[in-house]
Amino acid sequence: MDVGVVLLDESGRLEFASERARELLAMTGEPSDWERVVDGWAPFLDRAGEAPEGSVELDVDDPQRLKQALRLLIHRIEDQEDAGFLILIRDLGTARALERDLQMASQLRGLMGLYMGVTHDLRAPLNAMALNVELLKRSLAPGEDSDLSAKQRRRIDILEEELGRLRRSLDRILAQTAPARPEAVRYDLGAVVADIGELLAPQARQQKVTLEVDVPDGRLLTFGAPDLAKQALVNLAVNGFEAMPEGGTMRLAAFAGDDEVAVSVADSGDGVPDEILDRIFDLHFTTKPAGTGIGLYVTRTLIQAQGGRVRLVKTGAKGTHFEIRLPAAGSEPAATEVA
Image 1 (cartoon, one colour):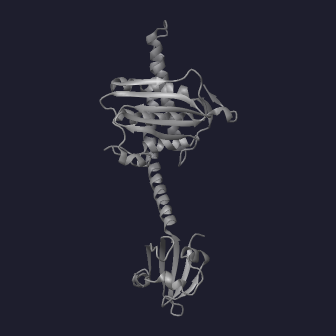
Image 2: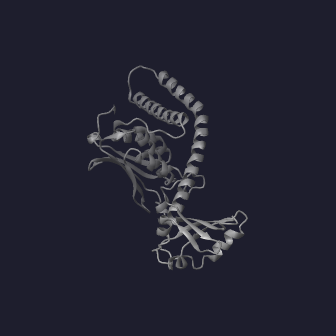
């Protein structure tokens, strides 16, 4: 147990100190140890005695007497025969870390509730969109194949794929309280990047952004969930577009590394200010007036779920460059493979 326990009599003399309490208070066993530790603590005991609930919690950071900062919970014992004080002691750093974890858990629970509500509301229009895309595909004349017809069909195929991915994501959220990790498959990261390039092409043209997509001839096989990789790339790309409201250049490049496959997302926007670099992956941190602060946090979570990592390579006046790296699939066990 990480909590130290101390019992004092009514005058503040030590009656008992657990082993953990002695460790936290740096007590060596000498008779003068307790006096050294509690010198100046009398006001704390008085506050506990005067508090309506008979207890007080406070943080003590006294380098001259303690080797570490502590959190004390002091309870006043009112028993007539054994009046005194019960003190529970914890390392302050551990206590604060637990508080942060609890706060994060509460935020995530609230966020999940929001996702569940939004997910439920989105299912109906998403199903209607999928149905209309299917009808549009059937309406294309099957006559002679032409470049225009091929492009139209390819764009419809991309819309179907993305609608299917979104529907699977919504179904996963509605099915449980937390999104499950999708079944892992072997897939080609280069093909995912090529699909994302085609998906983003219309937005790039509308926003006067030159979109460059570089995918090698060979396959870049990795083992994980292609839907998660697509979502992560879309999040990075959307951030890049938002950084170039007046146009610019975005480059998506897939490549192989040492035992890894990777993709870089680089834009020519204004870059990330130095003062917020350490916080860009934090949940709910945003500098946008209408932002939610979950895009980069979710991106990192999705990639880490596949054993990968996301990093900011560089940023500045000439733009921002992110990189996603995933384990190559060569050493993974056999699995379903996505073409």
